[in-house]
Image 1 (spheres, rainbow, N blue to C red):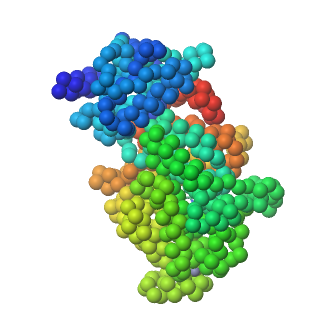
Image 2: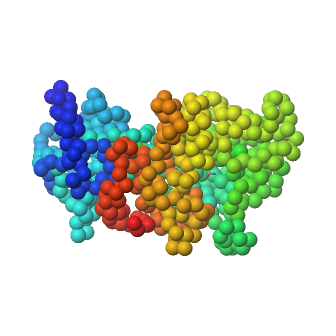
Image 3: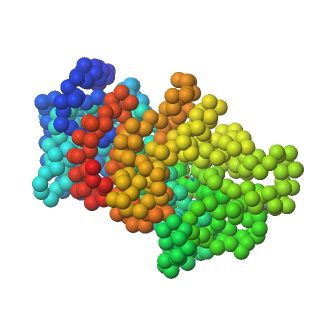
Length: 536
Ligand code: ACM
Ligand code: ZN
């Protein structure tokens, strides 16, 4: 009870001190809901203990993560113990408070001379408090080899996210990125309090996930002989491109993400964008092949046959393994950019249309997605797909990712379906972020740092009740023209920092000028971790 009174006290004091916020020189991205600067400060030394809520694995995970970060960045090997076994001072306490009133991902952080306390209802919340603490330790980057200073400035912070889906996508198919880089990418998500990694694993140009039942998916589908130069110039580089993740790799990455409170949403594309799978198993295409893994970019007419029951058997077998590997509730099934030309001339597809009483090929696509949704629901998963899955009728429980602008998202929310906003104008990080003449070659478009920052995920067309269906937002990173890790980091940084405030920070607390000020400190943090970014 005493603790609760103290917490309420902290919250009230923080609310009453909002005015002070603008005067602080504390740079935390994404910006917390409320910060009060105090005169207290805490110094970490070799005797500081990290103390976590006794008996909770999640709190222990957050404590071990903090220990590891302090070891890496401050070269101090701190003791980790539980609240039951430690009552002294000189500690960072990760504590649970069921009634803290800060939601499932919120936290309170309080710095005194004797301790730092991070209090949350859940391990997730405490982990975000830990992220804030790490940023406090690297607020003034010292001019020595350690990445962190050891002094935590006096603050009381009350913080919680605005949205529950705070995501980044990565296309590892157009160009493959290895396991170590994927972890580095996940580290960036964690640092920015993002919680969803959308992993685009299959495409026309490459299949990147091992499926034990269908070994040719990776034996054949993960290779292409060469890649077109530039935008389908007709000239090729003559360099074979390949790569895939074994199921062991996937398990390792899923665990790595889970240790950072990040859920992975795997994407297995269907019915279009599937040439690599068809190159391996041509019997599941309308025309029967032969097919080749694509070496040019774009949208291809060869897609899965929707009239063949064996296609669904194949996809269900693939999904059976995917479902086992990824513990999150969502499976992304793509659904975008599926040309209907093959279906129009395929006798099996036409028979399906007739037998099922469908109007046209758009309804056939809807039949396809609904059938896959049934399978996923039976396996305790939820289907999410790009906004084309609205065409021909949305599957009953589908969640929609709105990429062709916001229209699909608006329509879905009005129909009572959950939505993730990812409109291409503001959330496509493969777009140019400056004048094309002075930027690396990109797919096109223009999405500046400011465009991202000022993006508002709740469309004004929605009522308050409909707005509840907007789960959040994410940015997409398609890699047709992004070949190196340095280039990929350049494309996402600092736009991802801006996105983190879009999805975390309350809209009233957002301010582009103050974001830029914090960003100048934040970029030094990224630099110390050797991330490449576009200078501001
Ligand atoms: C997409 O960009 N085709 C989802
Ligand atoms: Zn067909």
